[in-house]
Amino acid sequence: MRTPIVLVVAAAVLLRAAIMIGYQRAFWYGDSVDYVAHALQIVPNPVRPVGYSIFLRMLLPFHSNVLLAVIQHVMGLGVGILVYVLLRRWQVRPMLAVAAALPVLFDARQLWMEHSLLSETLFTCCLIGAIAAALWRHRPTVPTAALAGLLFAAATLTRSIALPLVVLYLLVLLVQRVRLRTMLVAMASCLAPLFAYGLWFQAHHGALAVTTSDGLILWSRTMSFSDCAKIRPPIDLVPLCPPESLRAIGARPGLYITRPNAWLYATESPPFSADNNSLARQFALRAIVAQPGDYALTVARELATDTFLMTDRPSAFLTSGSGFEGVPPEAANIAATYGYGDAPAGIPVFSRFLEWYERWIYLPGPALLAVMAIPVVFALRYKRLPVRSLLPWTAAVALVVLAIGMNQSDYRYVLPVFPPACVAMAYAVARAKALRTATVGGTTPGTRTHAGATS
Image (cartoon, rainbow, N blue to C red; front, side, top):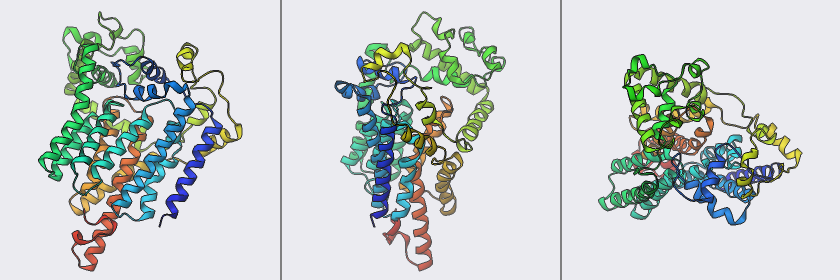
C-alpha cells in the first residue's frame, strides 16, 4: 500500500515550495560566514571540518543561495523517504514506516534548517545514508560496508561530533560478527578519508587532527560548573579559570570562547592553535575529574530542560523572516558570492502561513524522549535490543548526549537525531509486535518474515 507515503511526500513537497516562495533566499546565520569563507578558499578550518564548505564550493559557479536551499530541501525529502524505504525493506508496516518519516518531513525546525546556510542538513543526509547502508542487508556485504564507512567519514568531515559514530559503527559490525574482509573494508573506508584529511590539516596547522577546537569547546563546556578551588590547576592553567563576571550572569559556554578578552586571544599562538587546544583540554579533563558530579548534573539538567522537557514553540521562521538573523553589513561582500544582496523578497501570505505553521507542527521534547525511550522499553521487556535498532538508537543517544556534554545545548544540534531515533523506534515497535504474535501463535519468532521479525 503506497498511497499514504505518496500523499505524505506530496504534502511535504508543497510545504517546501511554500517556504521557497515565502522566503526567497536561504537564511544566513553567524556560522554561515565561516562556511562561505572556507568555500571561497579551501583550506582546513581549525574550528570545524570543511566538508560543508566543500559542498558549498561545488555550488559557487551558480552564485545562488536559492539553489542551495532547493538542494537542501531535496536532501530533507530524501532523508524522509529513505527512512520509509529502509523500514519497509525490513517489512515494517506501511503506516508505522510513514509515521517514522513524519518528523523529518514536517517538523518546522527541520524545514527551517533545510532553508539555512548551515551544515546540519548535509550532516543528517550523510548520517542516515550511512545507517541505511550499514543495515541494508541482514549481514553487511563488502560494498554496503564500504559505502556506510565512506558516509560516516563524510558526516565526520561535515561535523566532527560524528567521529565517535565511526567507532560505534565498527563496534556494531563486531556485534554482527561480519567476515574479516568486510570488517577490514569498513575500517579502511571510515579511516582512510579521515587520515587523509588529518594529514592535510597537519600540513596547515601542525597537528594530525580534524580540528584543533575540540579541547577549547570542551573547556567552554566546563565553565558552567568549574571551581578552581576544587580543580587546583597548575600555574599555566590558572588563566583558564572561569571569570566571575561571566559566572555571575550565567553565561552560556559559547560566550567564554567568543568574548574578545578570552585568554586564548592573549597567547602568542593563534586562538585555535594546537597549543591552546591542548591547554584547554588539560583544564577541561582536570575539571571533569575533580567535579564529576557537577559535570554530570550540568549535562543531565540541560538534557532535561533544553531537550527532552522543552515544549517551547519554535519561532525560527518568525525571527528569520523579520531580519533578526540576516546578513550583517561586515559580511555583505562575502555573502554576495552566493547571491545575497538587498532585503530578501518573498510573498507575505506564504511567510505568514509558515509563521503560523511552526506554532503547531513540530516535535516537542517530550515526544522525542518517548521516541528514544521505546527501544529501551523493548530491551527491558525482551532482554535485548534488535540489531537493526542498535546502530540508529545508539547513534541518536550519542549525538544528543555529546552535543551537550562536549559543547552546549542548542536544539539545532538535536535535529539530526530525529531520523535515526525514529528508525530505531519504528523497528522496535514492529519487532515487539512480531514477537508477541509469534508467542501467541506458538511459532518460532526467527522464522517469521512480517514486521521485521527475523532480526
